[in-house]
Image 1 (tube, helix red, strand yellow):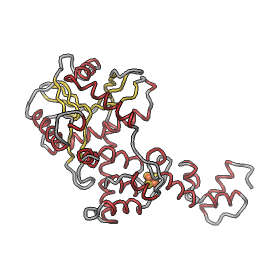
Image 2 (image 1 turned 90 degrees about the vertical axis):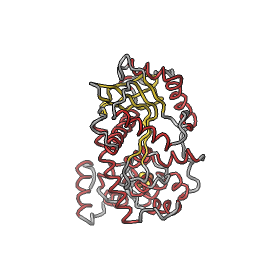
Image 3 (image 1 turned 45 degrees about the horizontal axis):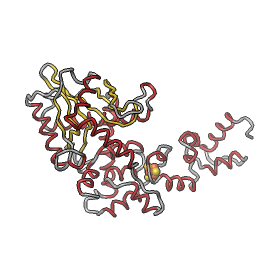
Image 4 (image 1 turned 120 degrees about the vertical axis):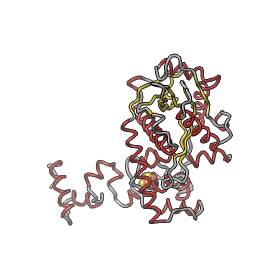
Length: 360
Ligand code: SF4
């Protein structure tokens, strides 16, 4: 992997935050997210035949092409779409591109992009007028415990001067089609979660730069989707991000707590090499849930482990809750007329009898 891509992957916080948020009870998942150890690598160490990870090349290329079509030629298409959706005023036409060369822009690398991002926010805070949009605004979160480097790249930032003070709002570009009320709920939820994270990151950054009073971050964002069947943008404005902002705030705190706990249990990983961190991920306790199947590359191994332990989770979260810690083998034995051995088993039998009157 070229160095700049490797660097970007290492520093990209968003993916790690979302990975953590999908199963924060699994210490292996927490260790993987906090220390940025790819779960796919751990999965293949565990089972060399585990499938390769990675996004579809076609999906990535389509995403890049869509973003470029918005931004190239002075972002005429982007600005027009934002004006049409009233994200920015009819007279707003300012644009600046903070993409790096590896992403089709002109900035040399992620450090240059971060410098430009912070300089842009500082200039706004110091009174520079700007009405329009910024692509790929990059910020580095000045917090050290959770992640050694926490850098976020915001797809699009809108900037409006309101009563002479700058108000910025985050936007997310997605290639899926805007189908009005029929747009897939999960797709929208993921995009809103990402935007909530951006709002939180911007607030932390502005605070660190001493600009909290000079630049306001809007509590709503906008999504740039495609029109069904075409690559033309369709902008959904006014996306309420208050809940997602709280989720991001709380999530960051919990990740920090997890990092501290991990450090206490396993060391901070600083003096271990990648193999050491891989061992850390593989040896940390797991907590398999329904959601693992949709996102984690170790799901197959963890499912088999749960199955051999007779854990009811293999039949889903609902069954696991109903069994309340009792193994599938014991549940089966109780249903086959064996006497309960513990109060928890007696309770399970009573609940089973109330739902299955034919049970002895
Ligand atoms: S599949 Fe396993 S390692 Fe991955 S999050 Fe679930 S329990 Fe953790």
